[in-house]
Amino acid sequence: MTLENNIRSTDEMLKDIFHGALHEIRTPINAITTAVRLLNDSPEENQEFRKELIQMITTPAENLSANADSVLGEGRVFSIQLPIR
Image (cartoon, rainbow, N blue to C red; front, side):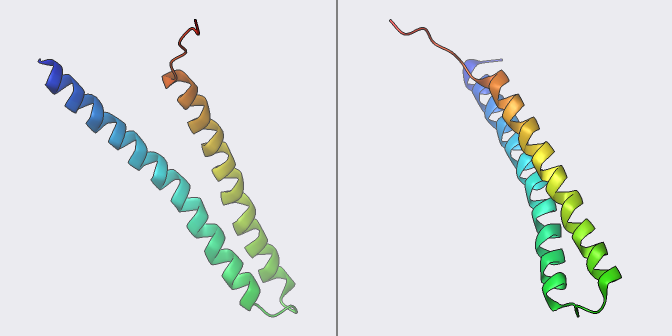
């Protein structure tokens, strides 16, 4: 395998990782956005439904936070530290 092929292969792998990370971020954001819209449109009298919507916001928000922590942790693996002279 040539250096050019290695670079292309690495580039494709990084693109796949990036697209996977975007999907993992967008999915909970979409769920949160939808639940907030429903919460804003729901009558205040329907407290049980509103509680369900709040849970629909809380769970994806927690997942998003965990995903961000995971991505940031994996980013540290890829970081390169160069000594300063």
